Image (tube, rainbow, N blue to C red; front, side, top):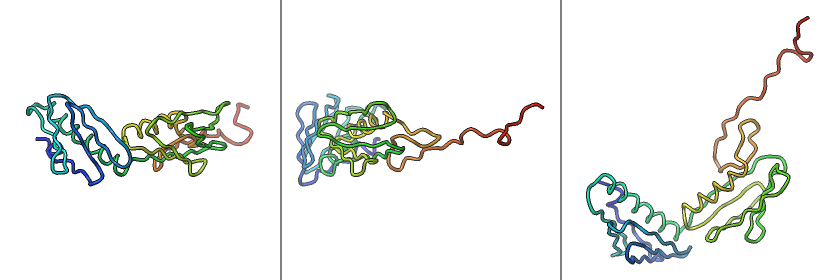
Length: 187
């Protein structure tokens, strides 16, 4: 039995959920999210809770049952509290700034990178070396943070690049110097 799937998703007082056909609309103070689920599953909203019922006890249905319940729970958390990802920029001359609906990132390239901020996402730069991605949709926040990080992943020798806050970058030793200052040649 899917233990996660059987638990109802409780709705706070500020959140409303409606089911129409095979889609769920959840609306709260941070925004509105929609999710389309498999039509053979049954989703009900009653007594300030969302319950998910699966059609059979097949292994795939059990897994999908837990998945649908988890996604709905993430949506409820997203429209009440929201999600956020922190990114840190390390490197000399590496910086970021928000200009309107565009994130301007300057890395070691010859040109600045202009990243268009998607709808439903807000990006802040409290410091030039810090980027904060916020939004109601957990998957979208993670995807935007990953796209920004992919512009310059942290490298293992000097640690330069864009990394998640708290991410550990495994460092490698550089080249080892062979012998003394003059080198050791055959004599």
